Length: 211
Image (cartoon, rainbow, N blue to C red):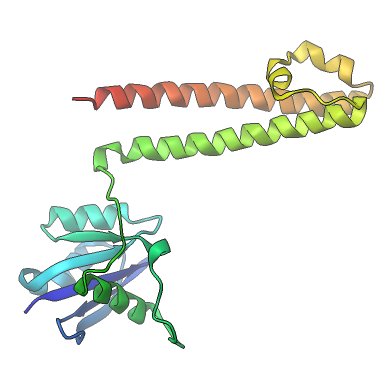
């Protein structure tokens, strides 16, 4: 008998549902988020489990890696591509876990890519870079808006990036406005330094991983 397992993963607990080939629930339990507890619960069924589905939430690394290391066939569900049955009036963690297992049984589960463990930190680093770039853009736009309000001129993006600390004084007659502009400029420079350091580190790690 082949079993299919769905795991509805939360921040500190998981709902685990095991169903058979007829969609009958064989086992269902909520467990704390420890690999030991989850693996201990699944161990009696391991030989019959045809696949385990884990939600693609922010905290899946530890669970997917741990189960794969124990020899389980693990799939990462692409939750954005999954739509529940039309007409369902009530859902909970148990029905969500069952539904994941049901999709796997029917071989229609939208899956996400399980990124290689060794390269995940670099990917996360690049995500952090994106956050810093967005923050830098926000600072640039804010400073650009300040200059526009005080001078009636709109500096291009290129000219904004070329601004030196000494250039700010000619755009602001108010000491308070100049001080605020200087804070924006310092933040931009600090973000530039962080982004450049992050890019250099990430590039080194990518080169190290090349065959």
